[in-house]
Length: 206
Image 1 (spheres, rainbow, N blue to C red):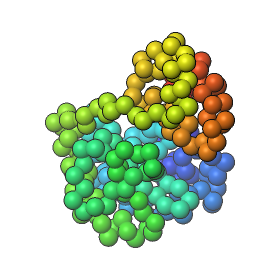
Image 2 (cartoon, helix red, strand yellow; image 1 turned 90 degrees about the horizontal axis):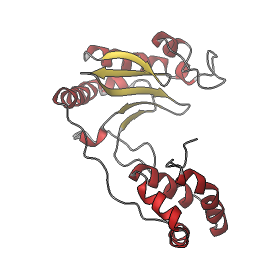
Image 3 (cartoon, rainbow, N blue to C red; image 1 turned 30 degrees about the horizontal axis):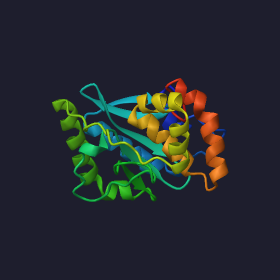
Image 4 (cartoon, helix red, strand yellow; image 1 turned 90 degrees about the vertical axis):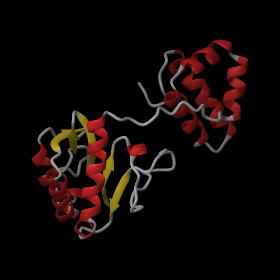
């Protein structure tokens, strides 16, 4: 992954084989990405590189991050649960994203078209950072798949370890198991995950 900010806008993020080639997504969206970068910098945000992408900070907090894919590019807000979204432009990144957190662009010209909205949203997010506000933690217990409930009932050690996991780690197993269409697949995954759960890890942690 890149560590220099200019590399993102000239070569890409460095996370795939299309890096520094004409096929890189940052080449498709170069005009829009450049405009989006300018708006973030004009807002007074500190520009850094995190996870191979331009990340914008204020008051010691991550405010937003820019990304580019084949079909779109986007500005994603951290702590999005605080955002009021009066223009209704925020979208969820996926079905398991709890709060709408990104503004998606499918053409380069849209950035300039909604520049006042972007500036206002960045200012709002910066205000939360200055005030030290954070979203309330999600402590709601996820609904467990039937096979996982059965496994926990039959294995007290596993049940104790699972209930010690953070809500986020518990949810990672729910998402993984729920993505399997067949019962036997879910059962096999539970068996595979047993060591992970006992170690206090989430489904995607190594």
